[in-house]
Length: 111
Image (tube, rainbow, N blue to C red; front, side, top):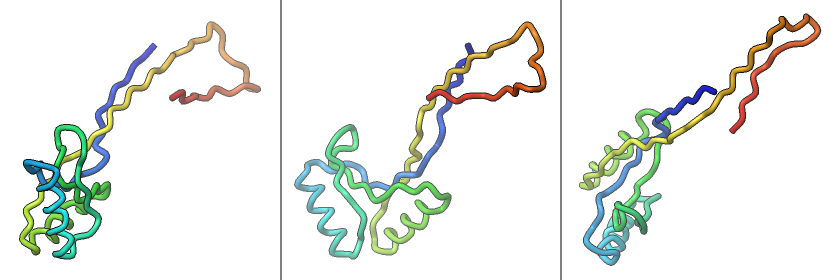
């Protein structure tokens, strides 16, 4: 059995850090909306609770463009890479005999 663990970057997250309360976060969301900022949400759980999410960007440069747009409005946003942990297991099967030409071998991915 062979095990493979990977930590793959899947996107860049643009966000504003947590504010002291959910009321303060909602007020900042409203203020940004008044500036014309779209596609934003208040984070409601976890360590970034009361922060503002301003988008996930899979393509290179997307997050930098978003930060530049926000900076032009006087908003200082941050970028954080987002990762996905992937664990795969492989089983290597060896035959004591060589398969005949009528049969072919293929790998099968099990997830």
